[in-house]
Image (cartoon, rainbow, N blue to C red; front, side):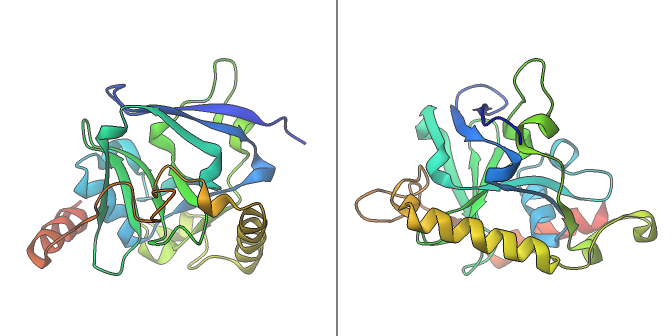
Length: 211
């Protein structure tokens, strides 16, 4: 079993910083998601080459937000939604670095931490810290030759069961009240979500589909 490790968090310019405390492959779910919305988020940020792999996948570590401590530059933490009912997608507005995805309510205590806001400590790899990729999901949206991609069209049942278990344990610990993404008192998002207009969404999707 891997020893839990603190994972430094920083945006590209270094203005927003923090740490994911005591993370390991056993304490989260690492996956690669190829869904069109994750791809759209990368294009909204205008950083697809840094976020997406060759098939349009985003490397994500699902973990409890209570383990995430943002220590510097909180004024740069921003939030957007592709649609009014979509997930909250968090990023640093100083340099448009993605941070992670959360549900719209803190009552489901998890964040999908995006790989490009963290670097494994010196002498380690991402596999060492957050474990190997457990599954590649939503391959029906992947780019290129999907036959050469070892991925699932949707999330496999084993991954869903594991995720639900992690979520339940987080709820039992009361992690829903300890999140940098929601106000501890009101439960409202820490930054007001910007919802894309229909025209903005079409422009993002057009850039995504033209790639």
